[in-house]
Image 1 (cartoon, rainbow, N blue to C red):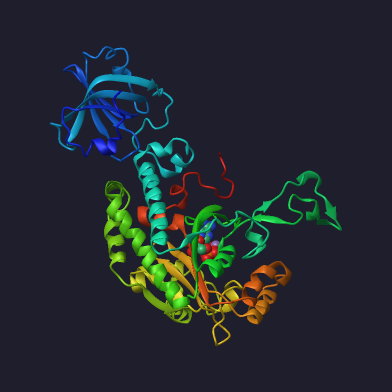
Image 2: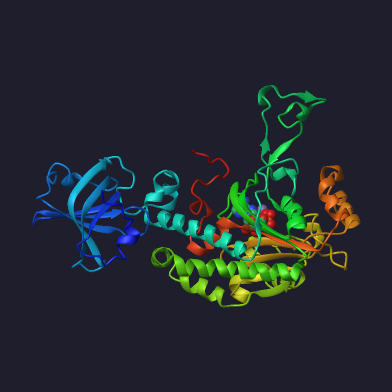
Length: 464
Ligand code: ATP
Ligand code: MN
């Protein structure tokens, strides 16, 4: 039996004259009057197609090969030959083309060459067969690998933080509830849902972050990271928000804000370098068809040092051009995505690290500065994307943390275990969360976050 070869491997081969078997899907077919056809086959291993020469002497030429259209699946056996045509080094001279599955050209949605991203979102089961979505899927895979490699190389322990959680880290309003209660006849006591009747005997949610659990393990194992799905029920229909997205969250014991920022810059640069090196064909494709400055922009970021400013400095800069913004910037208010992009794209023309946010606009677990007003917090902003990372040094003082929990109108009883970490062997520790899809957006140049995750979940959108 001849071993099946991936096209990614075959196009690099110069083993001319050897027998090959390949399996894939027809992208295009050209018939020539001279009694032969050219098939372009793609098997997903690379963005490149393999050209197959099928001559009319093949037994099923008229009955089948001539009828092949885009989307049909085939098994091709033949000989690898040097290609006389330009654009490719090798091609396959078919000895046999077996049709595995037909794709009726009357109804197959990818018959046409170009489709809008909006349309492709309605056929999420077929869009990975297009060049763009194939490239994104391979890049997403390589980025996952690069992320694990980055942390594993540095001795970080990969932590599986839970997806169902009993704590509501950043405000319950944004969380999806997990329940087995019969929602028609919910058990109620004094008009309030009685969660004692529910599966866990208390209210359960889908996690918005694995950070609190990562802190538990960092304070035992030193350096850990999570990399998994997180959920936000925020009703924001934007180009950079999903209801289900993946987050990377390292957490480091004996690590302050400065070291945390250093690691995050190194991390971003390392992932970007890996992709430029290891996904050349896919990146070249995206650079050609999605954004002509894609590779040069990424290259620029790898070779630049990030700008560092405080929140107060950011507000000063933004306040000078207040008329440019829909939301006027002001000290004590959130930095909006339009402000983030202005800082990166217009003012500094590079990634910007913003630190020392007012404590009123950030979560309770961030370390309060000596001024009592600001926090050891940092956001990293990228051109086009805005916030890519949110991180901080964590509050490691028991009393301060307890007060912050109360100020946030949370019940300290719910956080007894989190407070315990400050009671027993507390240490300076820090971490950050990076939105995986936002980084993929940045790397691929795709404008909408719905196009960098296989099956996007957004408000009113859950086809399958
Ligand atoms: P934003 O203000 O942009 O909504 P956030 O402040 O809510 O972000 P964090 O809670 O700090 O974000 O989450 C850490 C990272 O996760 C963010 O920096 C971002 O990269 C990513 N992220 C947050 N919310 C989403 C979302 N809904 N979809 C995709 N990525 C997200
Ligand atoms: Mn948010």
